[in-house]
Length: 153
Image (cartoon, rainbow, N blue to C red; front, side, top):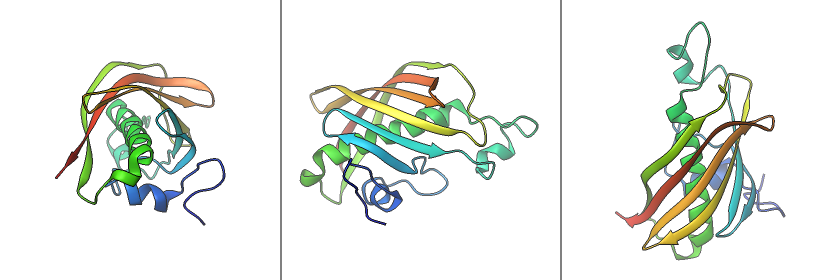
């Protein structure tokens, strides 16, 4: 399978080429749509095999809110990195610098497909500010504002 198709989609290999995360913390399975410097849509297929379900919660598995936010932050990272990938070096890393206005609207459970829709609000002095929304079957699960910056390590 190729990294990209005509709509700007990216498969797992393309994601792993841009994000440093690996199992069990790689929380994006596919990029569905991408508009440089504007918008990215991606998905996380949530399965009962996720390691966090062992303890959260054994009798009623629910994806931890902090991991929903992390998956949204990774989608923001993909949007930023894909937007500027021609100028990146192997030593560039996107750091999360803040999450504001986080709200959770519904639980995310095994069998759900968590869709990430992230948009660039602005880039100021090297800080990318994103609006991020996660949904399941069209129903809002979480939303927040995410701030990130690219740094060379």
